[in-house]
Length: 173
Image 1 (spheres, helix red, strand yellow):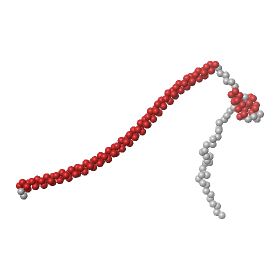
Image 2 (cartoon, helix red, strand yellow):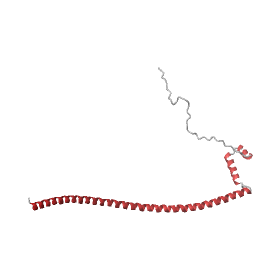
Image 3 (cartoon, helix red, strand yellow):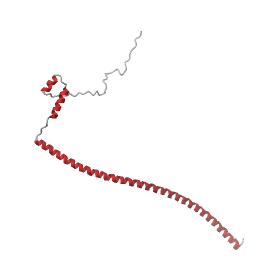
Image 4 (cartoon, helix red, strand yellow):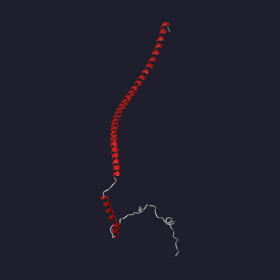
């Protein structure tokens, strides 16, 4: 039997491929500072999430104590923000009125535009009719001019004939 040589595809030759898709693995490290009681509970097998949830609840229920100077600062900041809010509300109302005014102007302009468009169509129709009347009058004028030329030729011929007849009548043939 003759052994057959095997071939390796070009895909399988070369360095190994690991792909290029992101794997979305969270590589961040979370650290917790547990109190001795919490650490003891965790060592006894209690779930860490439950321990931390309770700690957050306790923290939320604690009354917050701040210094009176800090309180005065916060209240002053609040008053300043209220004043800014009132000013902004006034500006908003003025802007709202201005927008309404411009909306009315825009609607009036659009109505005028529509009216002018109608007038424009009417004038274009009148222009078209006047062009047709002009064409008719030009054709009539050309016919009349042709008739005038023909009549002038006839008159010229008649004058020549009358002159010749007069000449024959006066001087004889």
